[in-house]
Length: 141
Image (cartoon, rainbow, N blue to C red; front, side, top):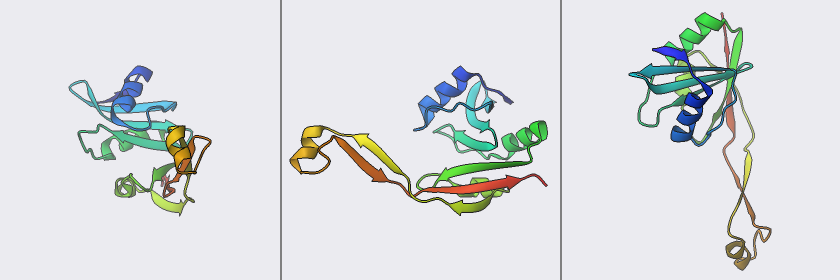
């Protein structure tokens, strides 16, 4: 069954299943089975994200078609983390690669003593780089 998710439902789902545990989207659709949320689709402006239950892999087609039929968007885009996300699921829905972004940096704090003993990052912060995002666009024909 597909239905709108409450903020509590999608917040709990993201907390339990994903590194990204916050999403303030205006449309939050869920695919449920026996009242268990299996797949979450969030849309804010024209940006779409899918979040799966960590224990189940689900085809996005049914939920995406429901959204397109109900809201009739002209175009949508998504930003896929090139380290983790499955681009094939989006390609199957008709999303086309527009470009790959530059790598992103992320800062995090470690134990200052450990860092300073090696003489690096004595301010207590470390920086890592990811692989950037694949930016995909879907257009309604």
